[in-house]
Amino acid sequence: MKKKIHRMLVLIAALAIFFTVIFVTLVYYELFRSQILEDLRTTVLLIREDVETGEMQKLQDLGEKLEQNGLRLTYTDSEGNVVFDSEADRLQMENHSDRPEIAQAFAEGEGQVVRRSETLSKSTFYYAVRLESGGVLRVAKDAGSIYSIFGQALPYVVLVLAILLVLCMVVAHLLTVRLISPIERMAENLDAYNDNGNYEELTPFVQMIRKQHQDIVKNAQMRQEFTANVSHELKTPLTAISGYSELIETGMASEEDVVRFAHGIHKSAGRLMTLISDIIRLSELDDDEQEWTSERLDLYALADACVEMLALNAEKHDVTISLIGTKECFLTGNRQMIEELLYNLCDNAIRYNNPGGSVTVQVCARRGEALLVVKDTGIGIPKEHQERIFERFYRVDKSRSKSTGGTGLGLAIVKHIVAKCGASMELESEVGKGTTIRVRFPSVIPFGKVR
Ligand code: ADP
Image (cartoon, rainbow, N blue to C red):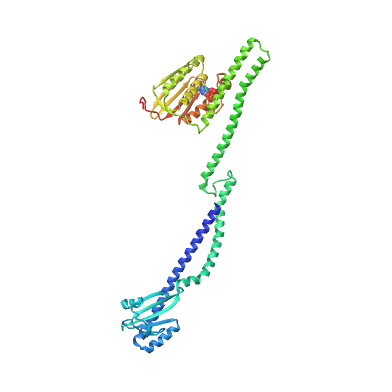
């Protein structure tokens, strides 16, 4: 980038210098040319009177005088035949009436032209005036052509160009360093970067990089925590299984104990299975590459099936569970995901309830959305825990969660599913009164209409 900016600056400077030189030369030549023609005009007008009143001898004298000054004098009659020429033998000269400056003088009174000579280096300037006699008097002068002037100026031009180029390179280098240094400083130490004195255009990049950096650190921390939690969670049932089986193996357990220990092993294995299937589920939901099939689902029908499935469980906890709301409430989504979401929310509402309590599941279709409400009259969640219960393995009351078969992953799975469905979720809870969770799903197909 540094090199590129530097090269661009030098290139711009070189082009600017080059075009300036060309332009200045052209302007200068134009001035030079008009000055010479103006001089020739003054001369020819000055001697015009002498020629008009004088004779041949006077012309001769004038011609000689002018020749000493590098000028050539020609005089033609009204037909364009050369009557006098200070340089050539007039008798050998052809009729001049077709020369542009003479033809112009015949027509307009005055005429001028610049003719390139055979060599490129010289041009001849002509100025002619018509006399009262009808003849034409012409003065001519040889001068350098634009090429020769340019050629003469070339060494100076090259010198100035070289000096300017060196100067430009130095300035371009300094400028580039100045331009780039804030970026280099930023690259060296992103944390020390602040907006003062730096480019405000860079601020969004810095903020984005910082945020990405923070996210990466946070992600790494979360992964580490998760691994530690998983190991810890797996350890408890595995230790139990190992302990029971060892007791049976050594023959230390009576027949009665064996049945009890086998039950313990069975329970711990079941717990391990639930844990592992929740962990696998979470990692599937975490995988952005995974593709999920979507279909048109009736939320009411799915909620009904879930309520029915959990009825027995509710009864065990002495809790009543019921479903209200709009029949045929449609949404588009992945069936397994919606079933899991319903199950996890209803299961929690039963497990964290009080004996004699109730769970009400409500489903309704609103304009453009399907609404699911799971409301319980349970123990509630203290304010300070409300934000964190969606984290992996976060539990308010660990022993209650474990004793009721919780893994601490249910709501983390729910949160993932809600995000995947493009839905939103609200939590309202008061300790001792109960908890309400609302999920709003988008793109509901208008109530009752089957596509
Ligand atoms: P768990 O498997 O422990 O139930 P979840 O992720 O489903 O894990 O929930 C996390 C924690 O949130 C639970 O341990 C519990 O403390 C609290 N919680 C979840 N749902 C409810 C509810 N309906 N009422 C009270 N507390 C709840």
